[in-house]
Image 1: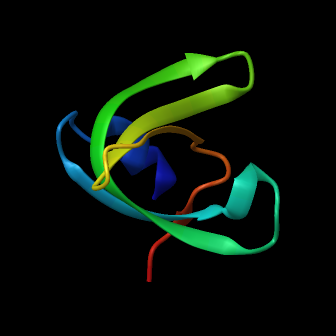
Image 2: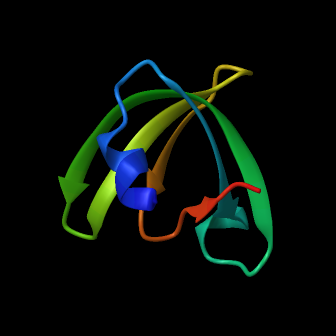
Image 3: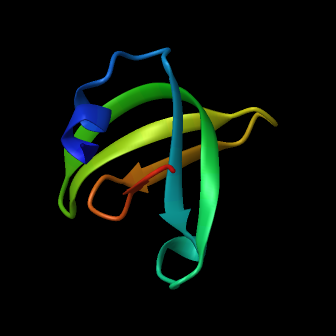
Length: 67
């Protein structure tokens, strides 16, 4: 399912769970608009703009499907 997140169209709304600070066992909800996706040295990622205006880059390997 997270591969679908990578292939989702830009400017579409997403809602996923992501580890807090990127490496903890505590998950936080990230919801917003997908700006772009790409491949870097650590694998695939997506860039999301949250409702409060913050822009975050999320590793697709760490994303968990939202309940």
